[in-house]
Amino acid sequence: METFWLGVIWYAAFLLSTTLHEAAHALAAMKMGDKTAYYAGQVTVDPFPHIRREPLGMVLVPILSFLYGGYTWMLGWASAPYDPFWARKYPKRAAYMALAGPLANLALVLLSVAAIHLGLYLEIFFEPNRIITSSVVGAYDAGLPTTLATFVSVMFSLNLLLFLFNLIPLPPLDGSNLYPFIVGEETAHKIMDFLQQPGIGIIGLVIAWFLFDDIFGPVHLFAINLLYPGLTYE
Image 1: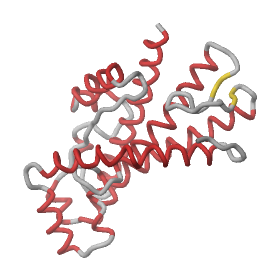
Image 2 (image 1 turned 180 degrees about the horizontal axis):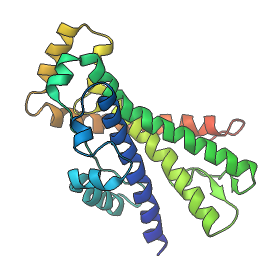
Image 3 (image 1 turned 90 degrees about the vertical axis):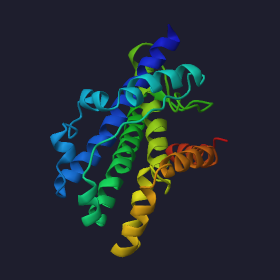
Image 4 (image 1 turned 90 degrees about the horizontal axis):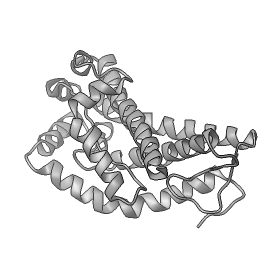
């Protein structure tokens, strides 16, 4: 039963985090002239339009990843549609749209930090001796305080992962669309054409997945030590 409720907490955090990520993409695109995602109903914090668009990545894969990943992670995906002709005409706007999703996850990390420190201040939470993804902070009492501690822990870890992973500059991740910030429009078009070739996204995703273990562990540990100044976790 404990594993079941942990899975419920993970799935709630996953839905919230992924929905806000995609809604941020959709909202940024709408504000900058591409209403494709808006007309598809993606400019919303309601998870159901996002689930209907990507049921495999929003339901099945997250549950299976939790069950077969040792109950320590829940991973999946979602997507917001956009007009590729708009992106080609306004590559820098498309880059801002791509950046909006990871920034939404960073905002959720910072909100989690604020919630953790509030709980510490109110003496509801305490700093644990050992840090895992679902136990960044502990609670003195069982029941609702422990549920809240687990939820903010998962939100902190999951959104830090989503922020970092999506910024890897490999397709199909958001980081692969940020090149217009550093190159001219002609070069941006050439890169865009290259990244749209069949199979490039799969190759990029496989490489990013293998690289990410070496990236996330040290960054997560660094973030934990920033979260608790004066304490040292290894």
